[in-house]
Length: 163
Ligand SMILES: [Zn+2]
Ligand SMILES: [Zn+2]
Image 1 (cartoon, protein in one colour):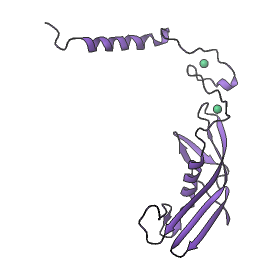
Image 2 (spheres, protein in one colour):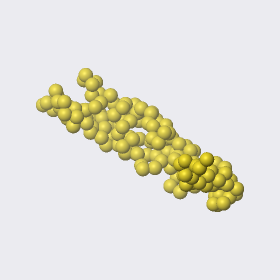
Image 3 (cartoon, protein in one colour):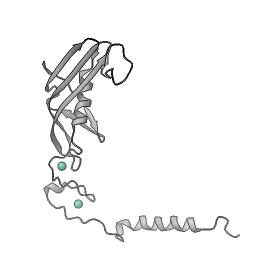
Image 4 (cartoon, protein in one colour):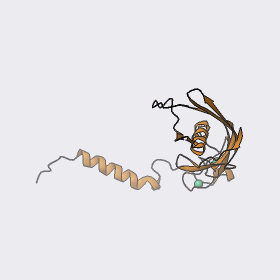
């Protein structure tokens, strides 16, 4: 049957992603076998959320095709669906996990997203911000280099300095 399946919000890499629409139309097949249930969920889902590089809104399309099996009275996790509890199938969590599984390795607003400048945070897709990556010896890193040197010197100091 085709059903509007609610997809719970997803969290990936600390960012929140939502299906758009939140109840996409998916095909849900429920087959009762002799000793249990077989479920299959498939269809396309549009997901929106922040781009991993520039944090602007990104849209990705994923194709979901997930199956769950539940054998009556089985304790084997392979044979008893996580999403089936007391005869109720938690479609929303299943759909969320199925979408997460089908997500691309990186969520980007576009494949060649330039990301944010590590120095000033400007969106580099909008053009060069004029910053240059700080070179070693740059004044901005001077304090850290001093600290690193002091820590090294401390390590080298004798444990019981002469009185
Ligand atoms: Zn981006
Ligand atoms: Zn910059």
